[in-house]
Amino acid sequence: MRIDRHLRPLLGSALLATGAWLPAAAWATDGYFLAGIGAKAEGAGGVAIAQPEDALAIAANPASATEVGHRLDVGADIFIPNRSATITGNGAGLNGSYSGNGANPFLLPNFGYVRPLTQRLALGLAVYGNGGMNTVYKTNPFAAFGATGNAGVDLKQIFITPTAAYRFAPGQSIGVSPIVVVQGFRAYGIQPFAGYSQNAAQFTNNGVSWATGTGWRVGYLGHVGQAVSFGAFYESKVRTSHFTKYAGLFADQGKFDVPASWGGGIAVKPVPTITLALDAKRIDYADVGAVGNPVNGLFAGVPFGASGGPGFGWRDITVIKAGATWRVSKAWTVRAGYGHSQNPIPASQTLLNILAPGVVTSHYTGGATWASARGLELTGFVVVAPKNHVYGQGSIPNAFGGGDANVGLGETSVGASVGVKF
Image 1 (cartoon, helix red, strand yellow):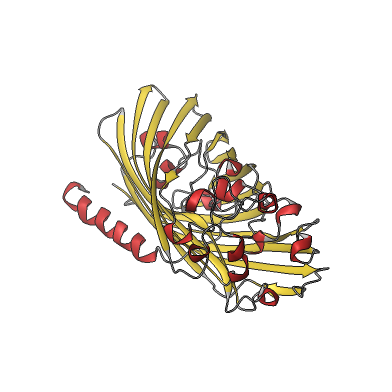
Image 2: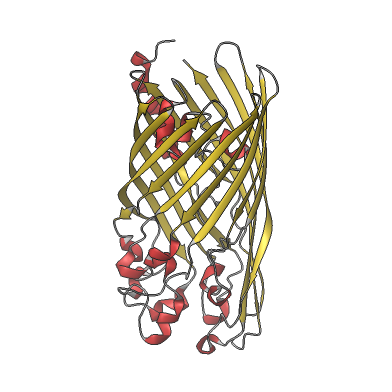
């Protein structure tokens, strides 16, 4: 099938569709990153660094563009997060149990296209939601402090990653992806804390603020014979513009960069029809002030929004993913997997993280693909992340009545994609 004369409409439609869905946000399993990009990866625990199966594999490892052939993949995920918080031992009236599920579910689209130009060179484009965070507390946990209306936050991110990959030797490829990020954020119902900001007017209830940024991702993919492949990637910190409407909330006058990440993977075929894959990834959350700075600085005289100001106190995490793929027949392939992520939120930092309880640590996955003889593929998957809790330890300062905030998050995700091999 010829694609050249249809390429521009396809790319344009994908970008427009993704942009239309951008106002929807989602939780992700690896902190606020997605556990995997694309239906095939998500069905196999998120593995993709050394096991590229579709065009969206370039979102995990740009070198994959030389391996997947000429193809187009379009899909969407539906996320249903279960967020909650409880406050105990507080002397200022905050005690209670609170549900953050005022908005559900969330739709997150993805699009990938790869085309080999020569036997060695391939180009691609991936457009996808990278994750995000969302809470809507219809019963405001901070009402005793004078907060009004619902309380919550809404962060959404879209990544646009054109990709080039080159096979420099048989079975050995490198790739690079410039990254363009568009992200939106809003916060509401946290008025009592504005008095601790250097800019109270740009702290809460200001609608959606937009920011853009750029970075890059580089990857390697190599084969040892027909049965073993290795992959590795590094993604730079994505430096973004400021959320100007929330310059009084986030550290460094509203900066909210995307943290750097890096990792590697291995895939092994014990028999030709079965692939076992393992990925490991590190996410440097603590290097982004708005995310990683602890709230403690607030009580050392550093207000919200200031340079080096308070943040959510997230720490760096390591993520391990394992997946199995079985090609049952020419038409059917089935997948299963498991992922484990460290919890980024210390027990001392749970107060602000009532708004962002990204504490899921495990996810279990399954999926399947049906392929026609003419190159059409239909893939579905399900991800279940059991609810995890972090119980505060001295997390509410005495100035706010003392006691502890306890946060919890669980997730269910289902999705599907359509792939076309040309």
